[in-house]
Length: 448
Image (cartoon, rainbow, N blue to C red; front, side, top):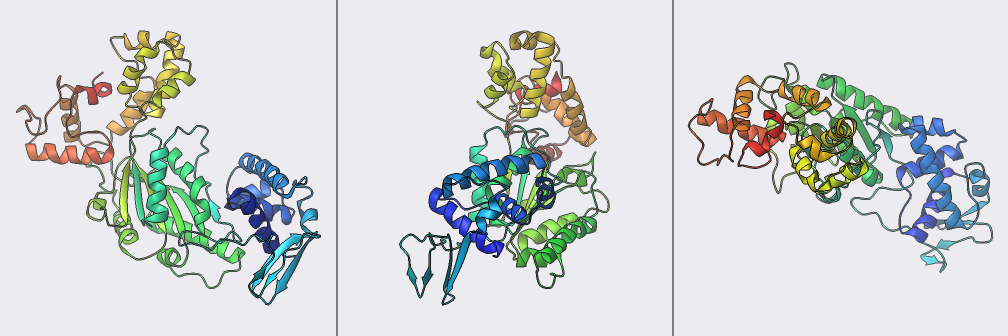
């Protein structure tokens, strides 16, 4: 009995009863169980945590028990599968059924109880070959705040528009990584390979590419693939790959204008341009505080490169206040505005309010000097990345009592108007500013 036949039959039964195919992790659990692997071994091969595999396996056995109308678990799955029989007729169709319930089809004649596999679309992948996933660099997300519209946008860009290069950018703690992790769980079965890498140590591009190629080579050999593609771009053309690069801002220089590469890392810019401009079927997803500067010339409405500026939570920020048990709900909107709906900042502020003010938001906001706590360290790290002139402009903006009209800028600027506009346009790219009019409300944290 071949496992691929069992997997195809199981997928058909699940699809017939639920309308959904098995995802890549479910397929990996079935394959590991068939090969008598333990959950830790399955987790290591799939590059995720043992706890996650156990949780998903429990859901899978419950699902199969409902679908097949008998108790299915890790201990008896193979024994149950060995009761299956396979019929091959005319080479046209293979249907696998339990003894006594054998479905046979051939010469375009099907039993009325047979459920055929729906045709593959441009964005579908065969369910018989689980996606090879390496998420060892991806953090485990314990809380994901609703980002329905952002998820829908990214899914449409990747699966329908087939974009090759996407950047999710925004302030630290805004939820870029959590959004990307959630996205992977929703679209993972549409790819041959999914790889997550952090650039927190700013590795040379050659080292990063070699690391990714090593994973691809190893998995291609394990699945009996043919000759290895020669370059990473060849892999991207041959297979449908999703590569997520986190902490992209670390390859940029601190103390310089946003998007300036560190010495020796300039080839990343060329690499990003190649991903966007050359023909292939894969997608590179960048997570960063700052946008690479060359993206401005290659992204657009009808181009295969786009950026998503991730902003703070609006009304969903109330969920954080409620979960943390904060009082004075009439003051929650002021608190959310002060921290611009940043989930990390709001959670850190909520901890301060619980510890020092017994959860009373009104008392916290009444303090003449804002207590930043751990947020100060985060802001300081981002502040240090700015150039000296950018710091001067930002401080000037923070001290304006009224909103600054971009058309009527006061004459006391600390720099030439041309430099001011250049800095502000770059800040819009790194999410320092959210609108084209600025005032003290946008920089209250910096000023206080």
